[in-house]
Length: 325
Image (cartoon, rainbow, N blue to C red; front, side):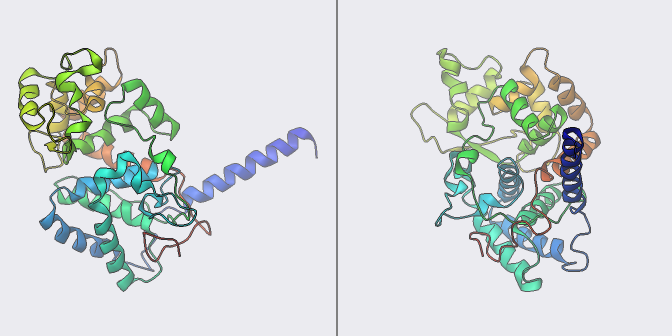
């Protein structure tokens, strides 16, 4: 076989493998093996939300943190074990500790109905969609068929996009996993509900980028309000709502906040306040049209959920999300 033919053959094999992987993710994947899976997940989440109004926001973030580290494979759910350095201990996941028991509750409920069928990675995807729906957002067709990894990557989790990332870094990290500027703005819109700890943004209130002054892209009145929640030398784990208008609703006020310099995190506000950025127009479009935001959010969640999934015979279907079989 010529060198050119060999290269062509290898390229075709890789393309075929990629195509099969994507084709195995389907909205109807569990229709015959676990047709009630969404109803089971919803039942657990409705109960969990009575005790923790933030649980939906936490679960979406958990799905996001899973997908950005070696793909959507449930690795973020694994505990420390021989050969496994848990991603749970990485700094970006420390605030999600209350979400893990809820995932375990969902898994138990699903196993009682469909033992050994539904992956933990898919449970995160389903739970994210239902969480948005319960908060007033629009449903989308979750693509399913992922399998669970047998490994974790704590170092990778430590490199997740952070609250102090500038737009250039955010764009680069999203591009690295096949997501564009529209995906970045749409998925950031998940900050329309949930909360953040003072340590994620307090520098914007007192000493932004070591200037000794507040962030000029933060509304002064809003900054003063935040100082009451996060005084200098105070509790760095104290919480502030990501959306100061409708804290627990999935809507477009997050984008209106950015237009008014009231984005809580630097990574949020930079989407609108970075001069010449193509994200400014996207923020404006979403602020002016709830339907456009909802449609784009669903599409971007599907794209994110399709980052390097394990399918077919790869990985496993964990019986317990915390450990490999």
